[in-house]
Image 1 (cartoon, rainbow, N blue to C red):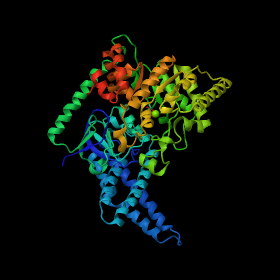
Image 2 (image 1 turned 120 degrees about the vertical axis):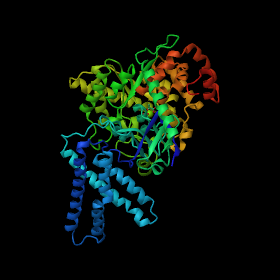
Image 3 (image 1 turned 60 degrees about the horizontal axis):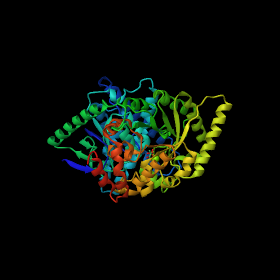
Image 4 (image 1 turned 60 degrees about the vertical axis):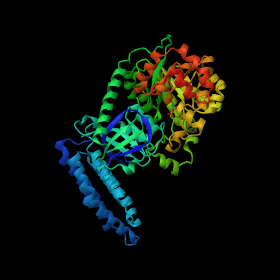
Length: 588
Ligand code: PEP
Ligand code: MG
């Protein structure tokens, strides 16, 4: 039966494929297709892991101390039976044979199927047995991981290199931002989640990868079944499950149209971004990893306006990257940009970007009450002075290889500016003492909280430039958790307060002779390009994939005409309506 689900459109385009349900927190399980001649080996690998775990359980039973609580042997006995049960490893073996999934993927896919059966049981005792099957699966996955490590010489095929398979779409209750790094290297061509907001970091990474995605689709992971055909309409925020042939055909047509449009825009990548009245506009790129710099160059971006360094720190447990490792990463990005500026933002962890693989649900319910207002961004860095100085030294050292700018996230207090500048001076001194080279770098603050706009004139005394993080500025101005789908309808970039704060920041920074850019999602959304140009903005930073779409608007803009509409937009209770009439906004 065909059903339609709605969520939030976070990343444009159409994806069509088979649903792969993955439990939140298990996205790090390797997903790749096994070559035909390796299928038997893969099934054997799965069975071996099962046998290892069964032997572990048998040994536990054998060596059980006589004073152990009586429930324990009974429990282990159940686990032993589950490990050997055909419905787990046996059926997972079929996934390997029929779908060519690797063993880990097959096992976790089968776990999802079984977990649903358990969820639907009326008997509470039986329902709770789901935990047992999860624990047993974890053990088999761990055995497979040990086996994969032992076989490290035989790297699995790179997922996207294995052609000829059906496209796959990941469906999960939630995906942690840290897991998006796995996603980047996975086989999936789109994803759907139950939770999340338009500017949650999971959504941001999806946009940066240009992968159609819908988040906040509430019941999606319950209603969609393993292997269903689904269509993601990333423009409308819709997911169509098992579409009828005529609907599928329509979406295939739209998918082809989208590809043609992309190819057309791509031809603009080397055209300089200059308005009709000769205003030069810098269109820079936001990146998460050094290797994204290549995509930035390919998009025609004239620099990196935001390097979100926190992604280097995720999934590392206690083993956070030290100074040398960070330096290598920053230098790689700087060298890849080949003389173009690279704005490196100090680590912005916290809120919906925890260091370890926590989902939003875990963050909200098991950690701090309100992580968005907690120890995040520059606050976190200042509370970890050793780590902070390591990062500053690494960034300074990278400045010897190109044009580097330093950017501080979420500055709200002048004391944060002072403390950071002191830490920077100390880091420079340490480098001089060690005889290491660095260049003088510009230092900027992100404008992400209303307080920063209110004290902008003082902040500008301390900084060379500012960069407006509209994602957080909207969140903190409107008191809307940007990652919470329940209040997503109130997350409104067109709110007069938001528009007013952005306009005020741009005009005051420009009047003070300081650089100003926007690096939040608004900068990459062509709907806002004319508005931001009318406010005097000449520097935008966005996902590389958005550069040409924004450039197209810049090339057709005449800022002398745009500017005349600004006063009425700023004075209006309905800025969006006035702007739509004045600027003929795309998509309106
Ligand atoms: C922002 O808040 O707009 C921004 C660019 O920073 P991040 O999205 O990484 O919080
Ligand atoms: Mg931010």
